[in-house]
Image 1 (cartoon, one colour):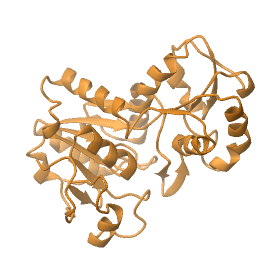
Image 2 (image 1 turned 60 degrees about the vertical axis):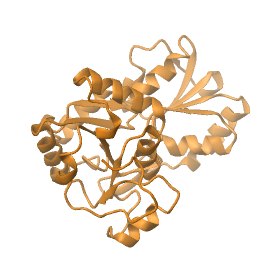
Image 3 (image 1 turned 135 degrees about the vertical axis):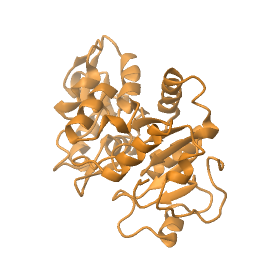
Image 4 (image 1 turned 90 degrees about the vertical axis):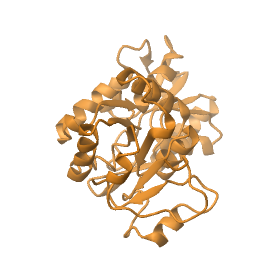
Length: 289
């Protein structure tokens, strides 16, 4: 396998992941933007993962979803992602539950939609209004279909005045949902940091989610977490690619609307990954076998 981050040379544009499958033992595959778009599954990506597994590989879906893995598994079933495409799921929500647990017994102000309440299931916390909180937990926007971080300016300023810490359960800034770009919890967290607020992040590119992923691989098959035989696959430059490089895992970049507005070619790849930045070993228009 090539090193986790390429030297400053051209990043190859490939159409098939199959040649890399033979030299890897497990894939750490992003979900949103690689496996589905929030509405429909990507058939070619699902087939690629299923083929890799049929050849003896392991696929762990590593997601910045703020919900725990069992909730994400149910969502994948609803969208139509086949179970044959993956072995296990590790989420930012899984890591966030550990961070939230540090505030057990205390009042928490939750920024995020009702669908993310599974993140708090079984935890000893009380959800309250911001003026009564001791910590903010951000899993997303209340209504990501129409809101932006600007809608939270006054609330964040009031929380910052009280020096409330924030736990961000999804470091993503934006994702593509059915062809539309929507804001994620990471955008709220960035706005809070710009005010001087302190934020703890769960998920990529931070190491705890990779440590949990390596432990999950070892449970699936002892010895399978050898980083030289892993391959991270994702569409997030600052999350998937940077996080994999920091964790010592080679990566492949998959184009999505988050970073690529036109076609993916050598010029676009060079612009996305300038010299001196974390770089993948290859780039693909879509994940395909």
